Amino acid sequence: MDRWIRGVRTCPLRDAGDLGAALPPGVVISVAWRLDGAGRIIGGMLPRGHPQGGPQGKRVLHGEGVWAAEMFPRDREITAELDLVEPGSAARPARLVVHGPERDIVGYVDQPRLPADRYARLTTGMRRDARQIRIRAAGRIWWIRATKVFGVRVIRDHGVDVYRTRGLHAVFSAEADHLDVSVVLLTLASIPSSTYAPILGF
Image: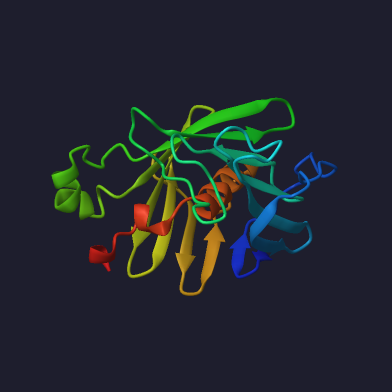
């Protein structure tokens, strides 16, 4: 039976294994989902200056149906006013860490098809095929792409659909596991949608 996360439907998941881990005190919660049968999943931020936020701050994901995860910005600090993470170029990606049950999984988030030249970004960089987010972790690659008007689609490796929006709902595929769900939710909660869905594409 499908499970719902505050308007997001997913495949059933077994216990994530880190249910006892608590959120750091002082985290600012920005996104909350409810995974039926598994509990609450939240995304938030630890700004620069927080004891566990690191020198630039970080975005965090925690919940009973996912593995705890963190995303670290490359250059710009995270503050209450600027709390999202820019993916960066292939040479300077943002970093994410998923705390799996056996080991930490380090990954990278970038936009390899976005032109580096500032002028090119104003022209070819506004095409949707250039505005795609790439996530690399544990030997997998995910692509986040805009679909239709306000839709989102996430494809893993060799064309495997992991996540897509359908109307007002979003669905994880039956192939999605804890790493897929953790990486997708952390990334979508951490980056501005304009990085993969330019206004001119609507």
